[in-house]
Image (tube, rainbow, N blue to C red):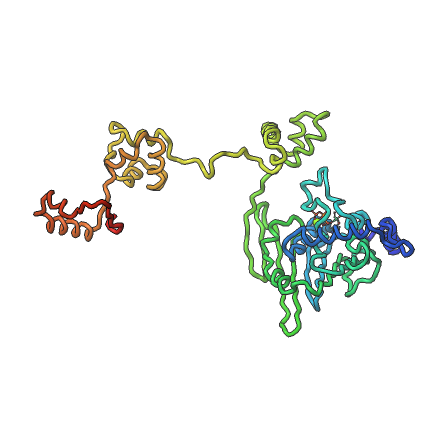
Length: 415
Ligand SMILES: Nc1ncnc2c1ncn2[C@@H]1O[C@H](COP(=O)(O)OP(=O)(O)OP(=O)(O)O)[C@@H](O)[C@H]1O
Ligand SMILES: [Mg+2]
């Protein structure tokens, strides 16, 4: 049931009932349990996420999990003005179940079953992160209009029926955050300004994000991003009239298959379940085996893990054996570059050097035989000049430079 399908009086009565069910009424003063729960909620909202602007992502995630009418372009708008942040979204609106979940802790409406793959949210706590930034949060959705006031008993989960503090946008769900006095507004504005259009690549439903900032003594700032599907695996992102196209590679995760398998294996064959989940029986078997070995991690990994990082090398052991065999390698006495060119080995010199060392027994000694180091002309001249200068010296002269004492003196610069 969406927000529109509940009458204004029913919406108000619903909010009153939620408050009543929490034991909050005029003649019932809050007891210890309320104070304890409040403390726990404050800790949760403040320490759940390190960053004070994390709530922006939580609100975007909630917007992305929403339902949208097929006639609208799913959009979120952030508007900062006069120390308040307004968030508007053209979703179908809060259902009574959504409102109830929002007024609870850990009671997500997105948990379990087939929904696991359809929603990002699942813990039922993300929204509480707004209280790290805001003292009061107003919500207007369909006929619902209420606020959460952190300073009131159970303020983060007990809704208070009231008017929205700004003009409402018919057909849109709006949030208004009154930011705390101590909150770092500059950090929030920086974060809003740096939101990147590429965020839209990772969202499933949202196709447009708009950010408007109005600060006194500053020119208003606005930015808009759009995402358009221009092919099966191609999307176009537009950021303030600049466009960029992205190819999308989709990766099938086995989570949905596991859910279906656990539910239906008693009355359906594996082949049938695999087919219903658009995969093959052999892939399904592989996933099940992985789940047996890896447990819950298998829900995220679809490929077996290799102990080695990177791609397998194209230089095989047989190739290395051939290179060090004089009978099979006519260019055996040539440098690495010649080996690579002659045998058309698809790698760089260093890689071949490394593989030869790995695959040939003592290959590095062998290699010394054919690796002729190129020396520069200058180096060569210097060596020749040195040889000429010292050509008359005999071996005995060598010892005249060595002094025998009870200590060994070594000149490190001569090493
Ligand atoms: N914009 C929204 N429109 C409709 N329902 C919402 C909206 N935001 C929150 N809700 C409802 O409030 C519930 C709690 O939201 P919250 O963000 O705290 O948790 P969640 O999204 O379920 O999980 P997570 O903790 O992973 O974010 C949701 O399960 C949903 O039913
Ligand atoms: Mg959420």
